[in-house]
Length: 350
Ligand SMILES: Nc1ncnc2c1ncn2[C@@H]1O[C@H](COP(=O)(O)OP(=O)(O)O)[C@@H](O)[C@H]1O
Ligand SMILES: N[C@@H](CCOP(=O)(O)O)C(=O)O
Image (cartoon, rainbow, N blue to C red; front, top):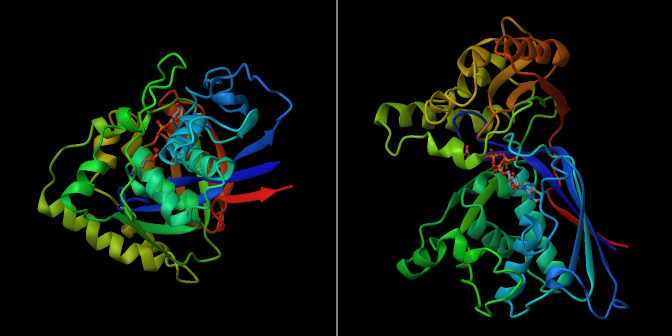
């Protein structure tokens, strides 16, 4: 059996929109087995998919519809492999809440690329697998954190015109809509080499992540659709100044709450996303290092609606305050205390 584990992630960390992400301790797991005795598979692409966890009942189980197996299929097709080995069984265990800003789609894409690499025996490096991930999830923060692990900063390289064109190919051509299980036989666009560059920052051992996860979904696509196309120099400088301080402030032990709290403020995405998340500005203002000792900083996790509070202590009180503010807005939530997942994505064979 091949076991692939990929952590969830919290992207942005305030001012680092589309730049920063931290992988956290909830893992998507794939258990992959092979059944060569099944000579004629009744499943699309020779791949049986089963699923347990968040989204069970809604997540598609046909291999040519499921995000994980479609992603694997893309990687395989790029290497002239048109189906899974007969018969492959992929059992998905997914505790990552879907559409909440904890990188479930990033984890699914990373898991899918690794799945393609493993079943096709392709021997791709993590960096090359990142290129495939970035052809599908086009902001690097979640997929880089999920693949590499820890607190990561990343950017997309400026590509030459030919490669730029290849990277900007519409997602529909990378992951074509399934044509009723009939393969068009067309080789998909290959990713350019070295699309994303990243660096792993340190992370002070005291810092933990309190995540407050509302009981409603906000798709990343809809949460990006409310953002402006252009920004003022003032707002960009506001974020850049804070981001430069934040990436080092979170490595310092003991962490400085006043410095981190201010450095986690943002003017690029959170103010626009308040239309999708009732009470967001009040929630972000509801806890400070002064009112709640142990708090370092608070922000929207990814595209929301989850709230990320970085804390060293007092976890339950901080979570309860934010839960109460959501409740005032008629929203119920669960909360979890998470730790950084320093290893990123892992593969084991047994
Ligand atoms: N394990 C999974 N298997 C299949 N599809 C998944 C999985 N995880 C996420 N997805 C897809 O990704 C969508 C959520 O992605 P997105 O809107 O980017 O939110 P987020 O990544 O913040 O959870 C889900 O609705 C589902 O379509
Ligand atoms: N930088 C992206 C991150 C989206 O993260 P997700 O976990 O919500 O998918 C954004 O803010 O749109």
